Length: 263
Image (cartoon, rainbow, N blue to C red; front, top):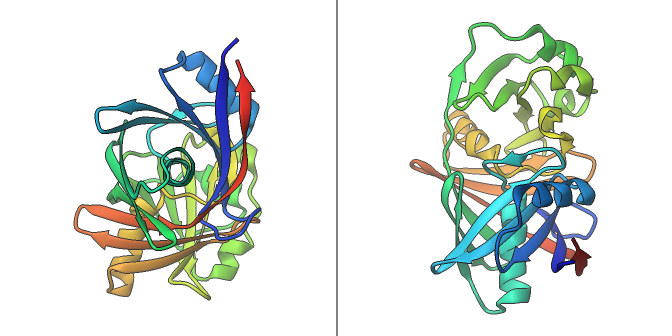
């Protein structure tokens, strides 16, 4: 039996029970993949992050309850929060090696700022019929992230995005996440994200999709900074800036839990 520390952090929020909760499990050495996936399932959160010290930084991996993912924003923010505030108080910057390359997080006042890759968006020749059926709504425009991992759906208003009542079983057949976005009422843009294909019906606050949202809204609004509100039930707030081929994604975080697990 191995005893491991575990933390749960609400990311992209300044209040407890807001934002997107992520579990963070620091490791001295890697567990086998099946055990990490089982921990992700047991936690039943959108993501569980694991990291191990490597060189001057850390190797970071993320697991949903069903799969390992290549990029996760809120669990990266949560991991940096744990390092800066609990494990290494006073640290202000960290470099994570990941499947998506090197990601850095730096403290800036009360926010943590993540340096992420920029995603491009491509036109779609044939929009799957299951998309509108699964959303119970028809977007004005549908694009795809360049890796095909998410469909990017543009709506006319925040109310349209808020009114979406998804059929998750139908959306799961798309084998992709679904980003729904529109101009925001109290922000530059409003967004919801559905990912039943990855084991998360609706994500509460998703950093990774802002790799695509930021350049889209920056171009549409003719400015480099984008204030985004993810209008999930818990609500999340992200502050983004387009910097060439990179995107800075910033937010706050609040610790909910620390304890131990035994595996």
